[in-house]
Image (cartoon, rainbow, N blue to C red):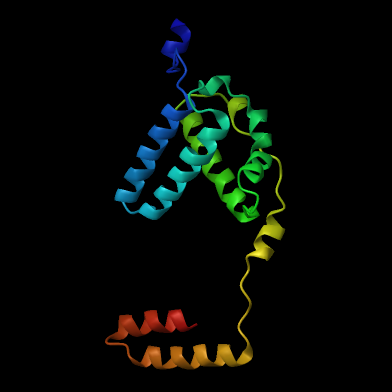
Length: 167
């Protein structure tokens, strides 16, 4: 116990929800400093509060949660909401993994506790949500409009930025 205390480790483990709340507070600080948007913080909060905490039963001690338990998460999510998109699951996995990385950096967990997920076919998720490319006529309209956008510059710096956007 003394060795753990000297090493900066916790003697009694925190719960998933306690770490989640601390992680969300750190994300809110990042938003205040404008490193991320407040909208992103809200998204992360929904993921961790509505889905992850419910799945893992968040009052459990974080070190009692086995990394392998997260492998059932995608199946569980599809049972909860059958039309959930793969890209949503990819984003949820990223948020959960980010929280675990935060917990690891704070020494609340060891590497063996870090969540493990089944693989998702990210390429198919990207393909399903990809928008159509511009047609030749649409591209010509955009390019033409951006040429006149550049001409509306009020100074040299503005002209350079507008040209950059056009290009």
